Image (cartoon, rainbow, N blue to C red; front, side):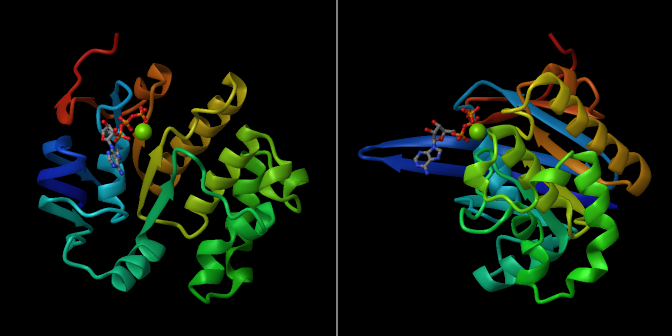
Length: 228
Ligand SMILES: Nc1ncnc2c1ncn2[C@@H]1O[C@H](COP(=O)(O)OP(=O)(O)OP(=O)(O)O)[C@@H](O)[C@H]1O
Ligand SMILES: [Mg+2]
């Protein structure tokens, strides 16, 4: 089953009188259970592409399908509901809600969709355990370290068993030990639950674990055959 498919996606930004093509005719396909990594220099368009795949932004042209649904055609409410059900997203800058505790942030996808929290207890304890967040659950994001905030954001992205996890530099702020824990968690989920993963990363140790590595260069996506 194809989980994510893009076809000739173009995204341009206008800055004063210049146009930046952040994503240039990108076509890619991710099958169920695959782990795809995207590398590339700063400014090459990685965040723009992954945001488009999550329906957080609209392309100028091209097609994006998640679980065979055309997400470009969805209106905002529909996209929110669809994302809440099927997509987990880890932002490059975590984007935790500052006045909610770590636990409340993690449970946000569930409380926002009006579901009963207790149904997710088992999942919650697994994520808390693997991400070593047990003693930080009742703190506000401002009282957590950057790495802890990032781990809370990862737990929030995974709490609702999304079919597709999109993560933008999920280990960017973590030291080596915590980056390894996050990678182990993701690889474990993929093994046990066939979690489909698309991860933007600068870390070649993470890219080395992927089934496929794409490289972005100036908006263009190509397959990377060898890791440097
Ligand atoms: N909202 C925006 N308005 C204008 N230009 C933008 C916007 N978002 C991104 N860009 C531009 O698009 C290009 C790609 O940016 P993007 O954030 O996708 O890069 P990136 O590969 O994620 O970089 P990094 O590794 O630093 O996170 C850059 O030139 C950036 O300045
Ligand atoms: Mg980025």
